[in-house]
Image 1 (cartoon, rainbow, N blue to C red):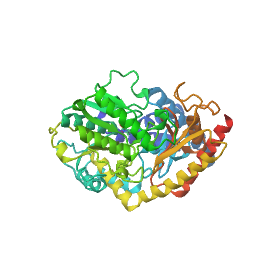
Image 2: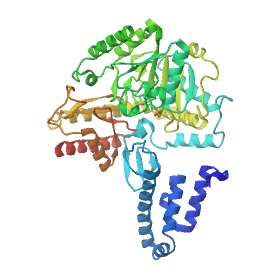
Image 3: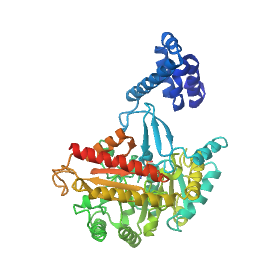
Image 4: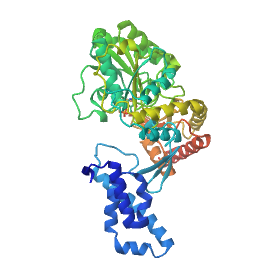
Length: 519
Ligand SMILES: Cc1ncc(COP(=O)(O)O)c(C=O)c1O
């Protein structure tokens, strides 16, 4: 069917329409999924439940409605089974279900569950699902031009987006833009640019950092071995230094930022005299808020120390704000808090509120050194994604979203710190940290990262983070874990209401009490 020259969507619609004609109401609850696989699975379901089943459903209206509901659940289950059979095992899944609708701060699954979403597709749908202005801008763009290959011509949303982003830059020197599709691609571009601009090869990365799963990005990712295990050899020329995170450094959670900074900058200087000479070092890449490594904001003094070392040695500083950027921490970019000047700034995730888009931003003086054609990609800076990003930027401003981040962040921290004070929970909660609406709770663990982990506590239950996350899902809150430690991360929509934030926090608290009580 798909090879007949019709589009994927047209084909799906035709299949669904055909099913709907033959099956009457049984198809309706799932026909919104828009998935061609859904259409195919539903049709095969219908074929198995033809004549006699359909006669029964027409007996009375009430009976028909009941049959429709149960068919809907069965269809959902059969779709999940279909997925389990045909979707690669290389993907993990928090909820083994089909997510059929996203609306503001809520998501609905095909089995009827509706959950408050504190995951936002891992920090992507920052203005909530299907924000009307963003979806409309994308739909309008779809009727104008969808694909303008970046090596063929400019398109208007690309340039409009630059106009929107320029005033948001954490440093006025950042004035040269390249849009790609994913965060990993932005990291690849950053590495390539740093090598081409400096004529050097080596890249220094941070312990605990996550930068993506493609070959270059994977080589600088040091948050968990799952991302690189079995895929070696990785890109050569990468060197890892400690990041100012107390747990990784084996010091108490209340260790002053100045001490963490001193330890890490000292190690960096040692690395530059012991392992990678400055003349061979193209860039230092850092997530200024460690994401997948546990939601740990870098102290301003550490970022300034990196800047100084980079300036001294002609090394470029790549700041990866793929997760912490675009309003997530309460400023357009986290770098604004410290006033640090990135040589290359990477942005993605919330940038287009769910449409695939990443940005690689630098200064013209540097990017003028790149050969035309050395950057690019078939779908780089897609017109629909750029139009969505323009609308996202407008909504961020018009709807005073950063002010909401500030207010909700204070409420979230107040509630979590209050929870931590409860003597029943005190031994179980090691840290509450983050910035804006990128917040984490780190639990204690009886095993930690191994026998040499100073912060293990045999009296607390095992696997607190994943058990609390599962309990939250049962209670109606979608929330994620992160890091090799027992960490839960809060990434709610930036425009979440006071009521929904409070509701999510209540569910989280209940889940923590229940899991700790169960032991
Ligand atoms: C800081 C950071 N950089 C890069 C990436 C990779 O982005 P993507 O998954 O879009 O390739 C991520 C994804 O989580 C990220 O958090």
